Image 1 (cartoon, rainbow, N blue to C red):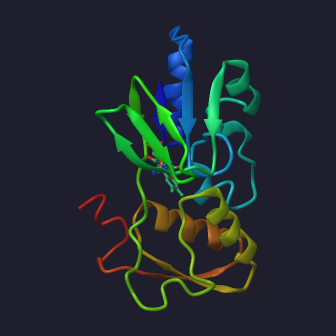
Image 2 (image 1 turned 135 degrees about the vertical axis):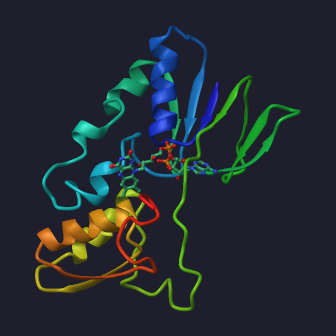
Image 3 (image 1 turned 90 degrees about the horizontal axis):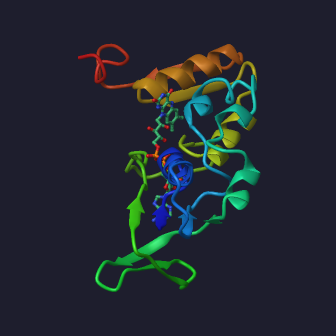
Length: 181
Ligand SMILES: Cc1cc2nc3c(=O)[nH]c(=O)nc-3n(C[C@H](O)[C@H](O)[C@H](O)COP(=O)(O)OP(=O)(O)OC[C@H]3O[C@@H](n4cnc5c(N)ncnc54)[C@H](O)[C@@H]3O)c2cc1C
């Protein structure tokens, strides 16, 4: 069983397979470092340095080895051959599978604008991106948050609680309008 995506879905699928008695080989492939965890604290308590991620791990770090789960981190699947039942990693390594679960989740919509990759402009999805925002979240600095969906609102609130002055930019009349039209 090969699972692509080491997020909440991939991690929980791995755990469920073992907990429901699947004894075959399980390989969990993720392109982030670390073990599967829930992202909610990245815009809230972790961003505000109120807790670490210990309580958000799907399973503790030792669990995977103890349960015979092979984890490939910092590895991207670049192609899947569903006829030959093979996935190919960015390293060139090929892995055969009998069953494949694609749990590659979501990704941020990026601002397709010149300058959108300049230093000081952040995205928020991964732990590394959260850490980068946290390092710059210093009291009395000024942040601009683009987008006022759930995560934009949460980040604006968290930064405010850290003493950062926040300006929010969004095209709707009020925050969360896309969520609660
Ligand atoms: C900051 C933040 C706060 C959030 N807060 C909440 C909340 O409070 N409540 C809530 O319900 N939801 C919240 N969410 C949403 C929630 O985190 C997502 O619903 C959840 O992450 C979905 O899990 P997933 O495993 O399906 O996808 P993901 O978490 O996106 O995981 C998919 C993984 O697959 C990897 N991947 C993608 N392509 C490949 C590839 N080709 N090869 C290898 N790996 C690949 C990705 O890099 C990623 O690591 C939040 C999200 C963010 C970013």
